[in-house]
Each structure stands twice: as structure tokens, then as C-alpha cells.
Length: 444
Image (cartoon, rainbow, N blue to C red; front, side, top):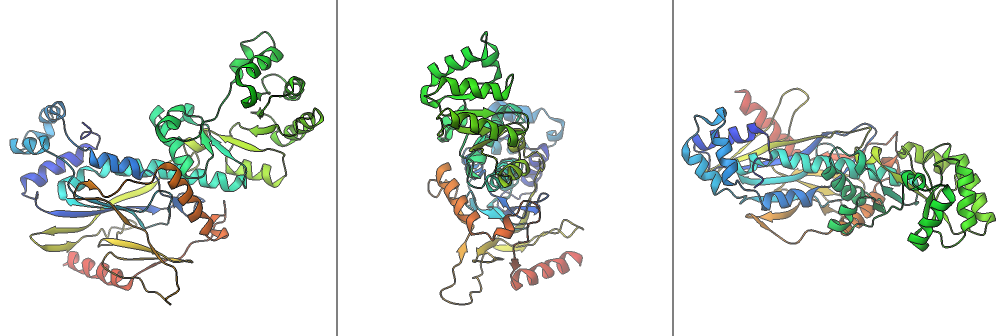
């Protein structure tokens, strides 16, 4: 029962399509990113698993249909439309780039080819699912890039926009390269490594800081990580060092992280705890982490919360879902928008990724290769065909590994955090000609 998880106008259009006799028409919609967020030269596609699950289970329950019947917007709808909804299932096709794929402006992330009403109703959920997780996965890739090999853990559920958003943020951050998450449900549901020991309230719950540390060590043994800045960070480090082994490390959550990490490292090393790690948290993002790394701060790992789980500097993605083809009675009609600043390109597409550029072509085209040895990959792949899953999707670990390989293959200048160079994306001549032909047709 998830049919109502959409905008109302998707359903009023569905009723109108039904009344107009358009149930036999097949539409092709593409989801793409119109404009990249600030300081980003690419986005990391994520959310496909949830999008596919939604399509495979899309239906309307009796209570949902009764609710729609009672809305004024459906007062003129045919009774047969509600019968149609009672039998509603997604019977179409879904093509998509694998999760973890770097995508550039204008390129389709996924393509839906289905009966018009089915493809239309799916718009809202697909945009939300892909848009949110893609934002977080992209932010994670930037944070991980800044950390330069030091592990980053996602800590943002408490400030995510909803608890479920926190779960999906943990998933997306892991795909983007984070080493784990603090969200236990994300760990349970997706098999993501989880991290966390104790908060400041743990320290305050005991008469003195040393007692809280001692109790934590008894509880966690070699997994012990002390949060040492509740009162005095340097003194907290001395108390942690005095307890000795077993210890995994300490966490700094406030203050001058560069200076404090140097002092704490000296205290730990002097006590013979050279293997104890220092983790830094506290309103971190890729820029602060980049500065700490560049300055040589002896920090072994980072925890990033609000900035990551909300993609704080770019909290929304300009993703769009537009019809590019419509077929009826064996006749195909190409469709596009030509309004200022919102132009779309007609025709179902494919993305071919070469070593140094992408070429976007019609789905019916072959790429232009310059030689037999040239490497090229077709990115859009079948996920659902005829309403059935083609094959099991890669799990989150495979998606994370795929993202790491893809990101490594991007030019370093493309991954720069502030002054990223544009990646070359070419559009086929055939798509250009098709677009002009459609423009002339709609202008007549």
C-alpha cells in the first residue's frame, strides 16, 4: 500500500489519462540532474535499490482508493478508474546506471519505459529516492576525498530530516566511501559497519570523569574509545592514558582540533599507547577536514554528522523526471520541453563512458570509437523488465567498491573540492538533429 506516496497531481493526471483512453500508450521518462550543486563537478548516483523496490511493490489498497474517491479532484472520475487502481501494478521497464556511478549534468540516471499512467505515478518517489541519496553519497565522496585515506564515519541521524532519512543517509554515505555509520538500523538492514561508544552524558552520569572512563573500559575492552572533551580535553587525555590498555582510542569533539590532537598524541605516546587512535568529530565537513589533513594534524579518523546527513551546503538536487518518448498504436512520438532554462532532449538515451569523456547518444545508437583498443562502457543497464527484476541488484558493499573504482578513474582536477574542472560530455549529432526536428514540430 504505497500508491499514495506521490504528489496529488500525478494521480489527477492518471485519472485524466484513463478518461482520455491513454491506458494503452507507452511512455518513456528519464530522470536526470539539470544542474549540479555548488562546488560539485559530478554527483554519485545512489538510491536505485529503494527505487526498484518501490516499483516492484507499487499498488493501491482499498482504504487508499476510498480516500481518493472522497477527494473533490476525483468527483468527475470514472468509476472504472478506481477499479483500475485496485489492480494496479508496475508492468514496465527500468534502466539505470549502477549505484556509485559518477554522473554529470544532463545525463540520465535512470529511464522508465511503461504504460503512461504507471510511468507518471512513479515520478515523485523516484525523484525523492534518487535525489536524497545521491546528494549524501556525493557529499560523502567529497569528505572522503578530503580525508585522504583516513576513515570517515557517518554520524548524522540525530540531525537528519527524519529518522528514516538517517537510515538512508547512512546507506548513501557508505556508498560514497564512508567506512561506516552510527545508525544501528542501517547496519542491521544493509550490513554496513557501525561505530559508536559513549556520549558526554555517559561521563556526566558518574561522579568523576576517571570513574566513567574506567566503567567504559570494563564494558568495551579493546573497543574502548573515550570521549575526552567533556571538561578539559588535555586532562581527559591524561586520565585515559593512565588507564592504559585495553584501548582503541580517544575522540575529540570540540576546540582547536589541530592543536589538541597534537597534545593528545604526545600524551598517549608518552604512556606507551602509540597504537591508540585519535578520532575527531564536531561540525566537520570536507573543508575543515581538508585543512586538518593539510596541516598534518595527527588525527586518524573523522566522524561527520549534520553536514553529511543533510548535505548541508547543497541540501537539494535539481533532479528532473521528463517524458522523452510516447508510443501509441505502434507509432512513436518524441517529446521535449523547450522553455527557457528548462530545455530537455527528446528520445531515450544511453551514456557511453570512455577513459576521458562521456558520450550521450540515442538508445538506438552505437558510440563513436577511435580504435579497437579504446575502452568504453554503456552505463544504463536493465534493472526491471516487464515488471520483473532482471537480476538481484548489487549489495551496498559492491556499490561502494564500484563507486571507489569509478571515482578513482576521474581526473584529479575533476575531484577538486572548490575549483573542479568540467568533465567532457558530448552529445551525439543524431540527438541534436532529433531535438531540432521536435522543436520545429511543436512550433508549427
